[in-house]
Image (cartoon, rainbow, N blue to C red; front, side, top):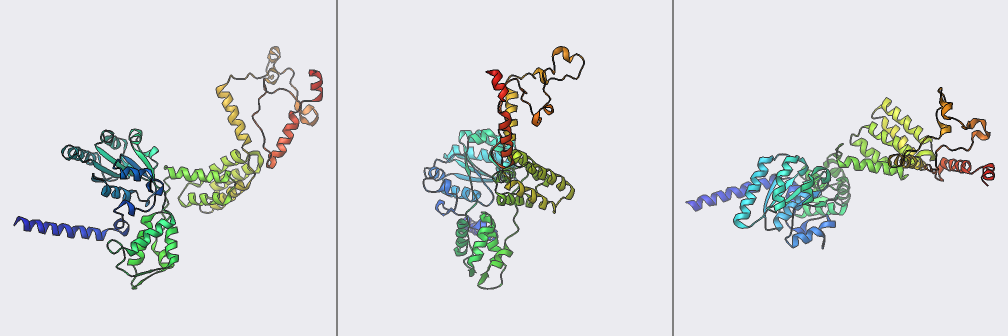
Length: 450
Protein backbone atom coordinates (compact mmCIF):
# COMPACT_ATOMS: atom_id res chain seq x y z
CA UNK A 1 0.00 0.00 0.00
CA UNK A 2 2.86 2.35 0.83
CA UNK A 3 4.52 1.59 -2.50
CA UNK A 4 1.28 2.35 -4.32
CA UNK A 5 0.99 5.73 -2.60
CA UNK A 6 4.61 6.52 -3.47
CA UNK A 7 4.05 5.69 -7.14
CA UNK A 8 0.96 7.89 -7.18
CA UNK A 9 2.87 10.74 -5.51
CA UNK A 10 5.72 10.40 -8.00
CA UNK A 11 3.24 10.42 -10.87
CA UNK A 12 1.58 13.60 -9.61
CA UNK A 13 4.99 15.24 -9.05
CA UNK A 14 6.10 14.35 -12.58
CA UNK A 15 2.86 15.74 -14.01
CA UNK A 16 3.24 18.86 -11.87
CA UNK A 17 6.81 19.39 -13.10
CA UNK A 18 5.74 18.85 -16.71
CA UNK A 19 2.97 21.43 -16.39
CA UNK A 20 5.36 23.93 -14.85
CA UNK A 21 7.79 23.37 -17.69
CA UNK A 22 5.06 23.95 -20.28
CA UNK A 23 4.10 27.21 -18.58
CA UNK A 24 7.66 28.53 -18.73
CA UNK A 25 8.52 30.98 -21.51
CA UNK A 26 10.82 29.74 -24.23
CA UNK A 27 13.81 31.62 -22.81
CA UNK A 28 13.51 29.74 -19.51
CA UNK A 29 12.96 26.36 -21.17
CA UNK A 30 16.01 26.81 -23.38
CA UNK A 31 18.46 27.39 -20.56
CA UNK A 32 21.45 25.13 -21.16
CA UNK A 33 22.19 22.17 -18.89
CA UNK A 34 25.85 21.64 -19.73
CA UNK A 35 28.78 24.01 -19.78
CA UNK A 36 29.53 23.17 -23.41
CA UNK A 37 25.98 24.16 -24.39
CA UNK A 38 26.35 27.67 -22.99
CA UNK A 39 26.65 30.29 -25.73
CA UNK A 40 28.52 33.56 -25.29
CA UNK A 41 30.83 35.18 -22.72
CA UNK A 42 33.89 33.61 -24.30
CA UNK A 43 36.14 36.18 -22.62
CA UNK A 44 35.86 34.34 -19.30
CA UNK A 45 34.16 31.04 -20.21
CA UNK A 46 35.99 30.08 -23.38
CA UNK A 47 38.58 27.28 -23.49
CA UNK A 48 41.37 28.01 -21.03
CA UNK A 49 39.62 31.03 -19.54
CA UNK A 50 39.38 31.62 -15.80
CA UNK A 51 35.83 30.59 -14.96
CA UNK A 52 35.97 27.46 -17.12
CA UNK A 53 39.24 26.45 -15.42
CA UNK A 54 37.69 26.99 -11.98
CA UNK A 55 34.69 24.85 -12.86
CA UNK A 56 36.73 22.10 -14.46
CA UNK A 57 38.94 21.93 -11.39
CA UNK A 58 35.88 22.11 -9.09
CA UNK A 59 37.50 25.07 -7.32
CA UNK A 60 34.71 27.60 -7.67
CA UNK A 61 34.56 30.24 -4.95
CA UNK A 62 32.05 33.04 -4.52
CA UNK A 63 31.44 35.05 -7.69
CA UNK A 64 29.41 38.03 -8.84
CA UNK A 65 27.93 38.03 -12.33
CA UNK A 66 27.50 41.60 -13.56
CA UNK A 67 25.92 42.60 -16.86
CA UNK A 68 22.79 43.73 -18.70
CA UNK A 69 19.59 41.67 -18.81
CA UNK A 70 19.41 38.62 -21.03
CA UNK A 71 23.14 37.94 -21.20
CA UNK A 72 23.09 34.56 -19.43
CA UNK A 73 23.73 35.31 -15.76
CA UNK A 74 20.88 33.15 -14.46
CA UNK A 75 21.43 30.53 -17.16
CA UNK A 76 25.09 30.15 -16.22
CA UNK A 77 24.22 29.87 -12.53
CA UNK A 78 21.95 26.91 -13.37
CA UNK A 79 24.66 25.36 -15.54
CA UNK A 80 27.06 25.60 -12.63
CA UNK A 81 24.45 23.91 -10.42
CA UNK A 82 24.39 20.98 -12.85
CA UNK A 83 28.17 20.93 -13.21
CA UNK A 84 29.25 20.96 -9.56
CA UNK A 85 28.66 18.48 -6.75
CA UNK A 86 27.06 21.10 -4.51
CA UNK A 87 23.55 21.69 -3.24
CA UNK A 88 21.91 24.54 -5.15
CA UNK A 89 19.58 27.08 -3.60
CA UNK A 90 18.12 30.12 -5.31
CA UNK A 91 16.75 33.43 -4.03
CA UNK A 92 15.48 36.53 -5.74
CA UNK A 93 16.53 39.58 -3.76
CA UNK A 94 13.33 41.41 -4.74
CA UNK A 95 11.15 38.95 -2.80
CA UNK A 96 13.51 37.49 -0.17
CA UNK A 97 14.20 38.88 3.27
CA UNK A 98 16.79 38.29 5.98
CA UNK A 99 14.72 35.42 7.41
CA UNK A 100 14.87 33.58 4.07
CA UNK A 101 18.60 34.10 3.86
CA UNK A 102 19.21 32.87 7.42
CA UNK A 103 17.15 29.72 6.83
CA UNK A 104 19.21 28.78 3.79
CA UNK A 105 22.46 29.53 5.61
CA UNK A 106 21.40 27.25 8.49
CA UNK A 107 20.46 24.48 6.05
CA UNK A 108 23.80 24.90 4.27
CA UNK A 109 25.67 24.65 7.57
CA UNK A 110 23.79 21.46 8.48
CA UNK A 111 24.40 19.94 5.05
CA UNK A 112 28.12 20.65 5.34
CA UNK A 113 28.30 19.06 8.81
CA UNK A 114 26.34 15.92 7.95
CA UNK A 115 27.41 15.16 4.37
CA UNK A 116 30.44 17.45 3.79
CA UNK A 117 28.54 18.88 0.83
CA UNK A 118 28.75 22.62 0.23
CA UNK A 119 25.84 24.76 -0.95
CA UNK A 120 25.75 27.17 -3.84
CA UNK A 121 23.43 30.08 -3.08
CA UNK A 122 22.36 31.96 -6.20
CA UNK A 123 20.99 35.42 -5.39
CA UNK A 124 19.42 37.08 -8.41
CA UNK A 125 19.21 40.89 -8.39
CA UNK A 126 21.80 40.98 -5.61
CA UNK A 127 21.88 44.78 -5.72
CA UNK A 128 18.31 44.80 -4.36
CA UNK A 129 19.56 43.44 -1.02
CA UNK A 130 20.22 46.26 1.41
CA UNK A 131 23.45 46.55 3.41
CA UNK A 132 22.12 44.52 6.34
CA UNK A 133 20.96 41.69 4.10
CA UNK A 134 24.30 41.58 2.33
CA UNK A 135 26.14 41.58 5.66
CA UNK A 136 24.25 38.45 6.75
CA UNK A 137 25.93 36.56 3.91
CA UNK A 138 29.46 37.69 4.79
CA UNK A 139 30.47 35.22 7.58
CA UNK A 140 29.35 32.16 5.62
CA UNK A 141 31.02 33.40 2.43
CA UNK A 142 34.21 34.17 4.34
CA UNK A 143 34.30 30.76 6.03
CA UNK A 144 33.45 28.96 2.80
CA UNK A 145 30.25 27.40 4.15
CA UNK A 146 28.44 28.62 1.06
CA UNK A 147 29.49 29.54 -2.46
CA UNK A 148 27.67 32.73 -3.37
CA UNK A 149 26.71 33.45 -6.95
CA UNK A 150 25.30 36.95 -7.07
CA UNK A 151 23.74 38.31 -10.25
CA UNK A 152 23.30 42.03 -10.77
CA UNK A 153 22.64 44.49 -13.56
CA UNK A 154 24.17 47.28 -11.48
CA UNK A 155 27.86 48.02 -11.15
CA UNK A 156 28.90 45.88 -8.15
CA UNK A 157 31.45 48.48 -7.05
CA UNK A 158 28.47 50.74 -6.35
CA UNK A 159 25.80 48.18 -5.44
CA UNK A 160 27.61 45.54 -3.34
CA UNK A 161 29.20 45.99 0.07
CA UNK A 162 32.99 46.24 -0.09
CA UNK A 163 33.66 43.30 2.32
CA UNK A 164 31.47 40.99 0.24
CA UNK A 165 32.98 42.32 -2.97
CA UNK A 166 36.53 41.70 -1.78
CA UNK A 167 35.71 38.02 -1.15
CA UNK A 168 34.16 37.46 -4.57
CA UNK A 169 35.46 37.15 -8.11
CA UNK A 170 33.66 39.50 -10.52
CA UNK A 171 32.76 38.35 -14.03
CA UNK A 172 31.36 41.00 -16.36
CA UNK A 173 28.84 39.75 -18.90
CA UNK A 174 28.71 41.48 -22.27
CA UNK A 175 25.65 41.72 -24.56
CA UNK A 176 25.38 38.70 -26.85
CA UNK A 177 26.77 39.12 -30.35
CA UNK A 178 24.44 38.87 -33.35
CA UNK A 179 25.91 35.45 -34.12
CA UNK A 180 25.24 34.31 -30.54
CA UNK A 181 21.60 35.35 -30.84
CA UNK A 182 21.19 33.63 -34.20
CA UNK A 183 22.62 30.42 -32.77
CA UNK A 184 20.23 30.55 -29.80
CA UNK A 185 17.20 31.17 -32.05
CA UNK A 186 18.08 28.34 -34.41
CA UNK A 187 18.71 26.01 -31.48
CA UNK A 188 15.24 26.81 -30.13
CA UNK A 189 13.64 26.07 -33.50
CA UNK A 190 15.40 22.69 -33.69
CA UNK A 191 14.87 21.50 -30.11
CA UNK A 192 11.91 19.09 -29.88
CA UNK A 193 11.98 18.63 -26.13
CA UNK A 194 12.25 22.21 -24.90
CA UNK A 195 12.01 24.36 -27.99
CA UNK A 196 9.66 24.83 -30.94
CA UNK A 197 10.72 21.98 -33.22
CA UNK A 198 7.29 20.31 -32.98
CA UNK A 199 5.88 23.29 -34.92
CA UNK A 200 6.98 23.62 -38.56
CA UNK A 201 8.49 27.08 -39.04
CA UNK A 202 9.85 28.70 -42.17
CA UNK A 203 12.16 31.38 -40.79
CA UNK A 204 13.19 34.08 -43.26
CA UNK A 205 16.87 35.01 -43.10
CA UNK A 206 15.96 38.71 -42.89
CA UNK A 207 13.68 37.98 -39.93
CA UNK A 208 16.48 36.12 -38.16
CA UNK A 209 18.88 39.00 -38.82
CA UNK A 210 16.34 41.54 -37.61
CA UNK A 211 15.76 39.74 -34.29
CA UNK A 212 19.50 39.35 -33.77
CA UNK A 213 19.93 43.09 -34.29
CA UNK A 214 16.81 44.45 -32.60
CA UNK A 215 17.15 42.52 -29.35
CA UNK A 216 20.27 44.52 -28.42
CA UNK A 217 22.22 41.47 -27.26
CA UNK A 218 19.38 40.34 -24.97
CA UNK A 219 18.81 36.61 -25.60
CA UNK A 220 15.64 36.52 -23.50
CA UNK A 221 14.07 39.26 -25.59
CA UNK A 222 14.96 37.53 -28.85
CA UNK A 223 13.62 34.13 -27.74
CA UNK A 224 10.42 35.66 -26.39
CA UNK A 225 9.86 37.42 -29.73
CA UNK A 226 10.42 34.15 -31.59
CA UNK A 227 7.92 32.34 -29.37
CA UNK A 228 5.30 35.08 -29.76
CA UNK A 229 5.66 35.06 -33.54
CA UNK A 230 5.41 31.28 -33.82
CA UNK A 231 2.58 30.66 -31.34
CA UNK A 232 0.45 33.57 -32.58
CA UNK A 233 0.34 32.23 -36.14
CA UNK A 234 -2.60 30.19 -37.46
CA UNK A 235 -0.67 29.03 -40.51
CA UNK A 236 1.13 25.70 -40.68
CA UNK A 237 3.96 25.83 -41.43
CA UNK A 238 4.49 29.19 -39.77
CA UNK A 239 5.80 31.73 -42.26
CA UNK A 240 8.06 33.76 -39.96
CA UNK A 241 8.73 36.82 -42.12
CA UNK A 242 10.36 40.14 -41.36
CA UNK A 243 6.91 41.65 -40.75
CA UNK A 244 6.13 38.94 -38.19
CA UNK A 245 9.47 39.55 -36.48
CA UNK A 246 8.84 43.29 -36.29
CA UNK A 247 5.36 42.76 -34.84
CA UNK A 248 6.53 40.17 -32.32
CA UNK A 249 9.30 42.05 -30.58
CA UNK A 250 8.23 44.47 -27.89
CA UNK A 251 9.35 48.07 -27.87
CA UNK A 252 12.79 48.34 -26.41
CA UNK A 253 12.86 49.14 -22.71
CA UNK A 254 16.08 51.08 -22.42
CA UNK A 255 18.33 50.30 -19.49
CA UNK A 256 18.82 53.81 -18.15
CA UNK A 257 18.45 54.19 -14.41
CA UNK A 258 19.18 57.91 -13.84
CA UNK A 259 21.13 56.95 -10.69
CA UNK A 260 22.87 53.90 -12.14
CA UNK A 261 26.11 53.30 -13.98
CA UNK A 262 24.44 53.10 -17.42
CA UNK A 263 23.42 56.74 -16.96
CA UNK A 264 27.01 57.72 -16.27
CA UNK A 265 28.39 55.53 -19.05
CA UNK A 266 26.10 57.02 -21.70
CA UNK A 267 26.76 60.55 -20.46
CA UNK A 268 30.48 59.87 -20.63
CA UNK A 269 30.19 58.53 -24.18
CA UNK A 270 28.17 61.61 -25.17
CA UNK A 271 30.75 64.08 -23.84
CA UNK A 272 33.71 62.15 -25.24
CA UNK A 273 32.07 61.96 -28.67
CA UNK A 274 31.65 65.76 -28.78
CA UNK A 275 35.23 66.17 -27.56
CA UNK A 276 36.40 63.67 -30.15
CA UNK A 277 34.76 65.61 -33.01
CA UNK A 278 32.40 62.78 -33.99
CA UNK A 279 28.99 64.39 -34.59
CA UNK A 280 27.33 61.09 -35.54
CA UNK A 281 28.31 59.37 -32.30
CA UNK A 282 27.39 62.46 -30.28
CA UNK A 283 23.94 62.57 -31.90
CA UNK A 284 23.40 58.85 -31.23
CA UNK A 285 24.19 59.21 -27.53
CA UNK A 286 22.02 62.32 -27.41
CA UNK A 287 19.12 60.31 -28.88
CA UNK A 288 19.80 57.50 -26.42
CA UNK A 289 19.51 59.88 -23.49
CA UNK A 290 16.39 61.59 -24.83
CA UNK A 291 14.61 58.29 -25.61
CA UNK A 292 15.46 57.08 -22.11
CA UNK A 293 13.77 60.08 -20.53
CA UNK A 294 16.86 62.04 -19.52
CA UNK A 295 16.17 65.62 -18.41
CA UNK A 296 17.08 67.94 -21.34
CA UNK A 297 18.42 70.46 -18.84
CA UNK A 298 20.96 67.90 -17.63
CA UNK A 299 22.02 67.32 -21.25
CA UNK A 300 22.35 70.98 -22.16
CA UNK A 301 24.44 71.69 -19.06
CA UNK A 302 26.91 69.06 -20.31
CA UNK A 303 26.95 70.84 -23.68
CA UNK A 304 27.72 74.21 -22.08
CA UNK A 305 30.57 72.69 -20.09
CA UNK A 306 31.98 71.00 -23.20
CA UNK A 307 31.85 74.28 -25.11
CA UNK A 308 34.32 75.84 -22.67
CA UNK A 309 36.33 72.83 -21.56
CA UNK A 310 36.95 71.23 -24.95
CA UNK A 311 36.39 73.98 -27.54
CA UNK A 312 37.34 77.09 -25.61
CA UNK A 313 38.99 79.86 -27.58
CA UNK A 314 39.53 77.66 -30.62
CA UNK A 315 35.96 78.75 -31.41
CA UNK A 316 34.59 81.29 -28.88
CA UNK A 317 31.23 81.11 -30.67
CA UNK A 318 30.71 77.59 -29.29
CA UNK A 319 29.92 78.92 -25.83
CA UNK A 320 27.52 81.44 -27.35
CA UNK A 321 25.68 78.61 -29.16
CA UNK A 322 25.65 76.46 -26.02
CA UNK A 323 24.39 79.27 -23.79
CA UNK A 324 21.68 80.07 -26.33
CA UNK A 325 20.70 76.38 -26.34
CA UNK A 326 20.49 76.43 -22.54
CA UNK A 327 18.05 79.34 -22.67
CA UNK A 328 16.06 77.92 -25.59
CA UNK A 329 15.65 74.49 -23.97
CA UNK A 330 14.09 76.13 -20.91
CA UNK A 331 11.81 78.18 -23.14
CA UNK A 332 10.74 75.50 -25.64
CA UNK A 333 10.79 72.19 -23.75
CA UNK A 334 10.17 68.72 -25.17
CA UNK A 335 9.73 67.45 -27.80
CA UNK A 336 10.92 70.39 -29.92
CA UNK A 337 13.97 71.12 -27.77
CA UNK A 338 15.64 68.02 -29.23
CA UNK A 339 16.19 70.12 -32.37
CA UNK A 340 17.98 72.77 -30.34
CA UNK A 341 20.09 70.15 -28.60
CA UNK A 342 21.02 68.57 -31.93
CA UNK A 343 21.98 72.01 -33.28
CA UNK A 344 24.30 72.71 -30.35
CA UNK A 345 25.77 69.19 -30.25
CA UNK A 346 26.69 69.12 -33.94
CA UNK A 347 28.20 72.61 -33.73
CA UNK A 348 30.40 71.74 -30.78
CA UNK A 349 31.34 68.31 -32.14
CA UNK A 350 32.58 69.83 -35.40
CA UNK A 351 34.25 72.89 -33.90
CA UNK A 352 38.06 73.06 -33.58
CA UNK A 353 39.16 71.89 -30.15
CA UNK A 354 41.32 73.38 -27.43
CA UNK A 355 41.36 72.77 -23.70
CA UNK A 356 44.02 75.45 -23.13
CA UNK A 357 41.75 77.71 -21.09
CA UNK A 358 40.59 74.74 -18.99
CA UNK A 359 44.17 73.63 -18.42
CA UNK A 360 45.06 77.18 -17.40
CA UNK A 361 42.53 77.35 -14.57
CA UNK A 362 43.31 73.79 -13.42
CA UNK A 363 47.04 74.53 -13.22
CA UNK A 364 46.50 77.87 -11.49
CA UNK A 365 44.08 76.34 -8.99
CA UNK A 366 46.58 73.60 -8.18
CA UNK A 367 49.26 76.24 -7.57
CA UNK A 368 46.92 78.17 -5.28
CA UNK A 369 46.03 75.04 -3.30
CA UNK A 370 49.50 73.56 -2.98
CA UNK A 371 51.95 76.47 -3.09
CA UNK A 372 52.69 79.59 -1.14
CA UNK A 373 50.24 82.38 -1.88
CA UNK A 374 51.74 85.03 -4.14
CA UNK A 375 51.61 88.59 -2.89
CA UNK A 376 49.92 91.20 -5.08
CA UNK A 377 52.68 93.47 -6.54
CA UNK A 378 52.55 96.95 -5.03
CA UNK A 379 51.91 98.72 -8.32
CA UNK A 380 48.76 96.58 -8.87
CA UNK A 381 47.28 97.16 -5.42
CA UNK A 382 44.23 99.30 -4.84
CA UNK A 383 45.19 102.97 -4.70
CA UNK A 384 41.70 104.46 -4.42
CA UNK A 385 41.60 105.04 -0.69
CA UNK A 386 43.11 107.61 1.61
CA UNK A 387 46.51 106.50 2.84
CA UNK A 388 47.28 104.18 -0.10
CA UNK A 389 50.03 106.47 -1.29
CA UNK A 390 51.70 106.21 2.11
CA UNK A 391 52.06 102.47 1.56
CA UNK A 392 53.28 102.93 -2.00
CA UNK A 393 50.24 101.20 -3.43
CA UNK A 394 49.71 101.87 -7.12
CA UNK A 395 53.11 103.52 -7.63
CA UNK A 396 54.68 102.68 -10.96
CA UNK A 397 51.49 101.25 -12.47
CA UNK A 398 51.31 101.79 -16.24
CA UNK A 399 47.85 102.38 -17.73
CA UNK A 400 47.74 100.15 -20.82
CA UNK A 401 45.61 102.51 -22.90
CA UNK A 402 48.20 105.25 -22.61
CA UNK A 403 50.60 103.19 -24.72
CA UNK A 404 50.77 102.24 -28.37
CA UNK A 405 48.55 99.30 -29.21
CA UNK A 406 46.90 99.50 -25.80
CA UNK A 407 49.68 97.39 -24.29
CA UNK A 408 52.67 97.95 -22.02
CA UNK A 409 54.96 95.35 -20.53
CA UNK A 410 54.86 95.23 -16.77
CA UNK A 411 54.73 92.52 -14.12
CA UNK A 412 51.28 91.27 -13.17
CA UNK A 413 52.68 88.43 -11.02
CA UNK A 414 55.65 88.70 -8.67
CA UNK A 415 57.26 85.78 -10.55
CA UNK A 416 56.85 84.38 -14.03
CA UNK A 417 54.12 81.79 -14.38
CA UNK A 418 52.72 80.25 -17.58
CA UNK A 419 49.20 78.91 -17.37
CA UNK A 420 47.50 79.71 -20.65
CA UNK A 421 49.24 78.13 -23.63
CA UNK A 422 47.03 78.56 -26.72
CA UNK A 423 47.06 75.77 -29.29
CA UNK A 424 47.60 76.23 -33.00
CA UNK A 425 43.98 75.47 -33.97
CA UNK A 426 41.00 77.57 -34.93
CA UNK A 427 40.77 81.11 -33.60
CA UNK A 428 43.18 80.21 -30.83
CA UNK A 429 45.96 80.09 -33.41
CA UNK A 430 45.46 83.86 -33.82
CA UNK A 431 45.49 84.31 -30.06
CA UNK A 432 48.70 82.33 -29.86
CA UNK A 433 50.44 84.56 -32.40
CA UNK A 434 49.32 87.68 -30.58
CA UNK A 435 50.35 86.35 -27.19
CA UNK A 436 53.76 85.28 -28.46
CA UNK A 437 54.30 88.80 -29.81
CA UNK A 438 53.20 90.40 -26.55
CA UNK A 439 55.46 88.16 -24.51
CA UNK A 440 58.57 89.18 -26.48
CA UNK A 441 60.80 91.55 -24.44
CA UNK A 442 60.88 95.15 -25.70
CA UNK A 443 64.15 96.29 -27.28
CA UNK A 444 64.57 99.08 -24.75
CA UNK A 445 64.22 96.59 -21.92
CA UNK A 446 66.97 94.46 -23.42
CA UNK A 447 69.20 97.53 -23.64
CA UNK A 448 68.61 98.59 -20.04
CA UNK A 449 69.25 95.08 -18.77
CA UNK A 450 72.54 94.97 -20.65
